[in-house]
Image 1: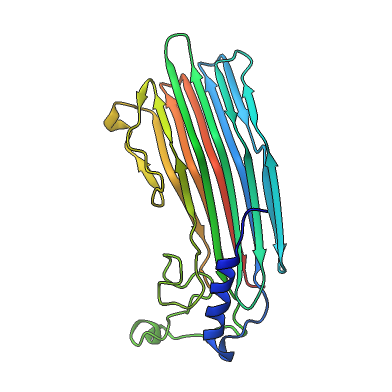
Image 2: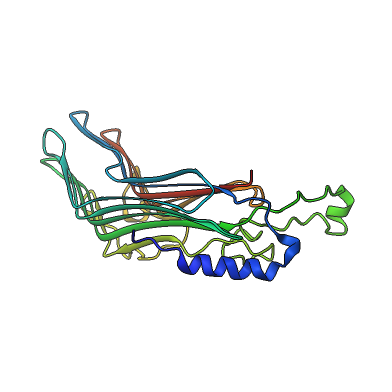
Amino acid sequence: MTLHLGNVRKAALAAALLLGPAAASAANPVGNAAAHDFSIHINLIGLTSLDVTSQTSASLLDVVTDASDLDQLPSLSLSDPLNLISLSSGELIAEAEYAAGPMSAIAARSTVNDLDLSVATVLVDVLGLSSGVIRSTTAMSGYCPATPGASKSLLGEFVFGTGFDFGNLNGGGGNGGGDGGGGPGGLPPGGTDLIDPVITILGIPVPALPTNPPPNTSIDLNALGIAGVTLVLNEQTRDGDGVHSLSLGTNAIHLGLNIAGLVTGDVVIAHSEVSMACP
């Protein structure tokens, strides 16, 4: 197991000690985590296609005690029947881990090494996507309150501010790390890491790709003269109120293709997701 939540757990436990007895948790949050490497669906000029789903996957389902899962594959090589679409990689690693305690933490990570995805016809190179490392990590920590919060009046919430609900799962601020002033829960460091990413579309290179893109980094391909293609790095999804439940998801790379209806596809590389819910 290469995914370690030691630092996260230490920070979570320290934060829990600062809370004092009034914030004692009623029960550990119910945790779920999942990670997988690929979701690739490409159709080329109606002649051939490549459909690839998870080659490595790790998951935790409804856990409340320490748990972990790990899946690895040394290398991968696939192609379509006409050898116009090819996919290869080095080691693939999917990881998930839950650490239970006064402040519980959960994380998932997908790592794709030495990726090479190529789509080409006799006339044009449609797509080239390669990278030394593509990694997504999604994590959170939090606790479940011992008693539900008291109901608050409309005037109390809007006039006196008593409606503020301390965020026990996400820190209340939505920016992670408990920096929102809403309590000690938080989002440990995560996101997307790219090493030596190279993307070319219709023979046009996409320049200056960030190695640690901010959440939901959308690359403007129209400015390069590339139509019908979308590219999002470190694509983030979020659901839940951050108090009773919270779920987060990360796609390191999400590429959508619809080039004049001749080349269509959806490519997701390195997906990770986690969630916590209070029972």
